[in-house]
Length: 101
Image (tube, rainbow, N blue to C red; front, side, top):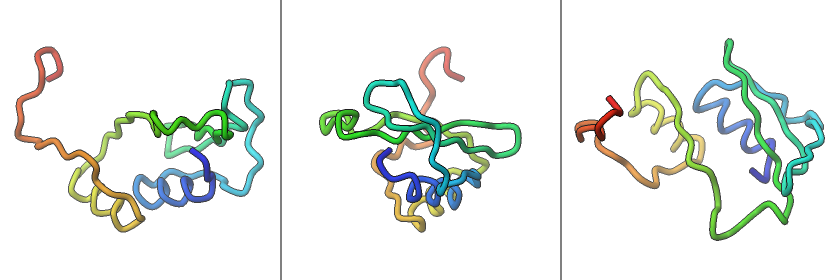
């Protein structure tokens, strides 16, 4: 992530995560990461990693993440309203791989 305020606003509007985008964040010792910015929703906690130029790799522009939502259609609509886009859509009617259901 390269823009704390933008990420904070996006995830707040789509998933209801609360974070302080104006905070400095905590310094990071991870290679390619300037600082870590925390978020929460209820008992769930997590963090955004603010990447520096060395941490941004055009060949690997992001991470694969999974979110549990009540309605995929509602979550996708919120993401698109907040400026996101659906890159890959897998039908919920396809069978899950063995051991995943």
